[in-house]
Amino acid sequence: MGPPGAGKGTQARVAADHFGIPAISTGDIFRTNVSNGTPLGKKAQEYMDQGEYVPDEVTNLMVRNRIDEPDAEPGFLLDGYPRTLAQVEELDGMIKYTGHALDAVVVLTVDADEIVAQLLRRAQVEGRADDTEEVIRRRQEVYGEQTEPLVEVYRTRGIVHEIDGMGAVEEVTKRIFDALDVVPQS
Ligand code: AMP
Image 1: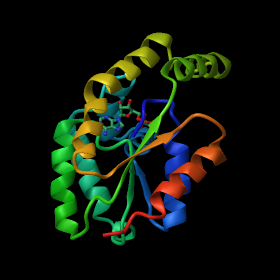
Image 2: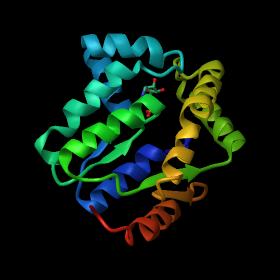
Image 3: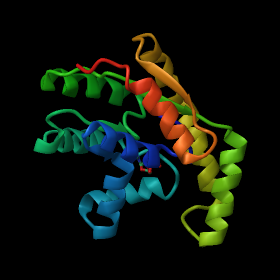
Image 4: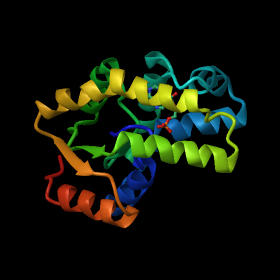
């Protein structure tokens, strides 16, 4: 977990590689569907373009189908899911059915102002029309309102690892590995 722009996607791929499990990114799956013009992509795009979350029913079903695939059988790392309380409950149900447990939740902590400034610079340089200042700010707001409260939910379960997400990618990766390498796997 972590606000948009914290580097979740990059770190998720490296960490999943390290543990030999797939990184499942709901944002990536939505983006692929948008590029391919699928019905799911068309539905998701309306929300993504505005910085809002795609409805839980759509997102939950997509994750359920994805973790049913054979490569996720030994375990998986979720990037960008769950993001709402309803998704937390749904994920609990899905994991129970796999016979595993949720071993760890990594929260990347970052300087929000710095991250927003970086995202704005990137949007300008790359001329990304979809990343307007309004949408970038809305994404941060939605994270604060709907997703940040989930950290407390997982903290009471004793599985949260708060990691300083500022600095070079490799430094952040090292912090994540140091925390996760000692977590027993279910
Ligand atoms: P991300 O790349 O993870 O920031 O996701 C990009 C966009 O996809 C988000 O701004 C949402 O519109 C949508 N999205 C990704 N994951 C979820 C989720 N778990 N629940 C709802 N919407 C999501």
